Length: 77
Image (cartoon, rainbow, N blue to C red; front, side, top):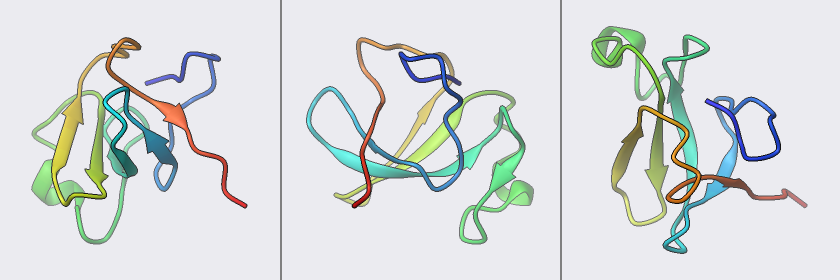
């Protein structure tokens, strides 16, 4: 999955969703990257997309780059 600027969304990226929630990418099925807490064994049944853990504790799976709903990379200072 890509950000609106064309760069690849990667494991560990901090993101902001259009609704204002923030989160971190904990799994990317597209790049086959999984955090230890969200392992490939548990989530590889999802074939595409990314999984975001929001600051509210919700897991959100996006299969397509729905830019109207998704993903602005948060800058990390």
